[in-house]
Amino acid sequence: MLDNVEAIHHSSIKINNVFIDPFELNEDYDNADYIFITHSHYDHFSEKDILKIKNDNTIIVIPKDLNDSVLKLGFSESKVICVEPNKEYNIGGISFKTIPAYNINKAFHPKVNNWVGYIITINDIRYYITGDTDNTIEARNVSCDVAFVPVGGTFTMTYEDAASLVNEIKPAIAIPIHYGSIVGSESDAIHFVKLLDKNIEGKILMKY
Image (cartoon, rainbow, N blue to C red; front, top):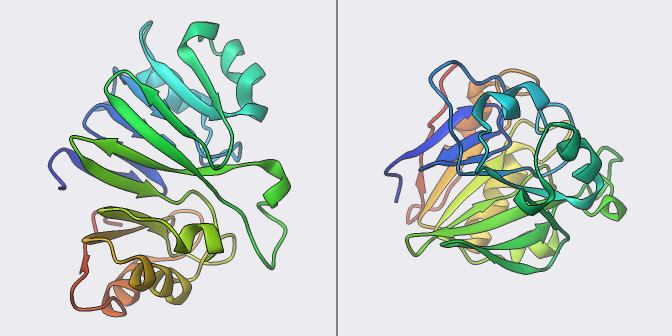
């Protein structure tokens, strides 16, 4: 399930040639087939990193509030997929669902913004990338094989909240993200893995 899967930096993920929230990429990364953006904060929508991996055929998937910004980056309208929460989509050989991503008791990610996480199905494996969210009712209703969840706290879930969510939705594998560079530390990832039920494999892919 983790063949060709990387948690690169912060919340930046690569699955085959699909990038999610590319951020602080080095020169090893280029030529994205698809780019998925969860929301407009600079550590998730990084224009310089998108331009590193964009080519003429790259399709970018975004919340609606980013449409003007990606057109200014040189994407043609035919390569831009604007999404909203609680929908299902199919592009090429990839199907995906959008899950609302928002804070419950803090104001960093309001639900009204319609920002999203994604369940992306590739080779029959369902990868859930939560986006910047708390432990919401929508997240708790997700069914997936691999879950990428933020553990750094402050702007998103703490590692305790993240473990509680994962233990409820029961993926085969859970990968902590959103720690190490802006908020949170590797210790949050380690504590997260320790709190997972024994039938869920916790994998730390990012190293700081």
